[in-house]
Image (cartoon, rainbow, N blue to C red; front, side):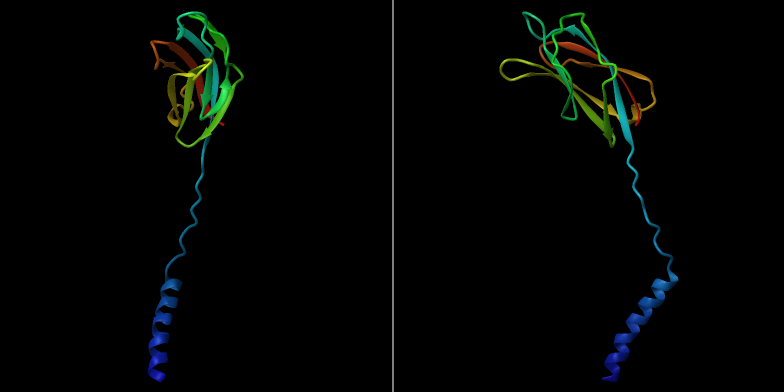
Length: 142
């Protein structure tokens, strides 16, 4: 019985010495930065519908942020005051054209965290049937 106890105590003593000799691991904290997309304007360069005006709307990360409104070629809508916060490295802006059936996807723009503090950004939605819209926005830390 004595031999069994001696062999059982030895590993416990080694483990206790090792943990006392090693410094405790530093607690790691993960900080997540939040960014704000400040929308400025949306311009219709070429509409999607052949007759009448388009009815575009803008979603960012699945949330409706603008529209639908009627827009024709050359029309610009002010989006000043509309913002969207995101965390992580990117957000997705998607433009759709409202229809009586299934809405048309007009394209997407990926907004990256690297754009933060870089000033005004200009990008285009130009996915479907030659429709072209220009979005102007700015990204800043929230």
